[in-house]
Image 1 (spheres, rainbow, N blue to C red):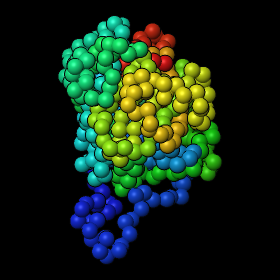
Image 2 (image 1 turned 90 degrees about the vertical axis):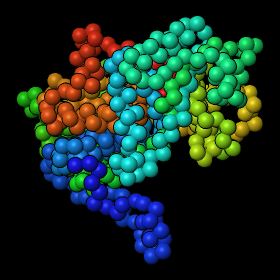
Image 3 (image 1 turned 135 degrees about the vertical axis):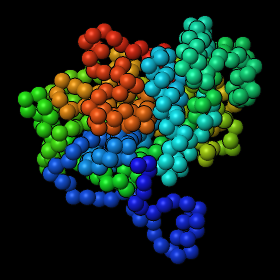
Image 4 (image 1 turned 45 degrees about the vertical axis):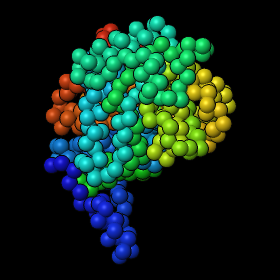
Length: 421
Ligand code: PYC
């Protein structure tokens, strides 16, 4: 059963018909009374929770599912990230996993009947020193072995791709080369959240916004359900798909996670004529930039260096960002910033996620996404749905289990982070 829609189908013809007849579109998802029992309760209505619900319903026919969120759908990391998609990771486990996500993203608009504006415009990670260049070469080789398109290119090719970059050797941070990853790009993150929500709703999943989980009930080592601000729910499966608060939600079930939470700030400029096609990342300068279809430049940085749950922007961030961006592209000095914001990143010791079972039977994890969460939404949802439906951990996530921290099997992805942390 693939992407069956019970709501209105979106099409150019439908748009014309509704324009002419002045008939409203039906709501993309419905409001429901909270039931007292579900087969699966998913905590967090971001891309991970919604994708898990959608694949449970569409691939496995499991529809008695509630997705709960303490605020509004897609209002956490899923609506605050800088919408970069890529699979040029460092470890074979990471590359294989994120590559599956890129492939799911490629067909997502057609599957969900929702334009998610995935633009595979290419992704460049700049190397400003020999150490970075060595890591880029290593990543390129691991990528190629997994069939992922990545290669190291030199300053002349970089200049051809991004003419406004200063690649001269006289700059303070000379560009020695870059990891070029053509399938990488950007997506419209809200559209992904809304598309999954609409498709999951159409298949019978219930989405409950403004419904905070305040307790997780476990008895004899097994989950029984959750307490919420709208009452108790019993369920044999509870999935923690939160970001930013994942260690607090896990603690409600008595599960301790090796996670510290840090804000990550981002900013957007006024729109200008298109001049930057490729996504550009500099780990050394702690900056990544892409241009939206509307013409704004979207900038991000590394995580703030202190743990916090604050989602406020800081002046230090904008000052540092401006300095670093201008070191790369001096010609945009007159552009004005319009807005800045922050999201929360749950950092794990190895920069890889924590997915799968816990010591509490029925309580599952899809957390610890650091700065990579949005990229993984589709593959994480697909894998979590399979785990729930079959009771078996899919091979593609087996390396990301919670037990690896106690057993010393870390999956080190820090070298593939977009920026230094
Ligand atoms: O890993 O590509 C990345 C990324 C972009 C923004 C934050 N992380």
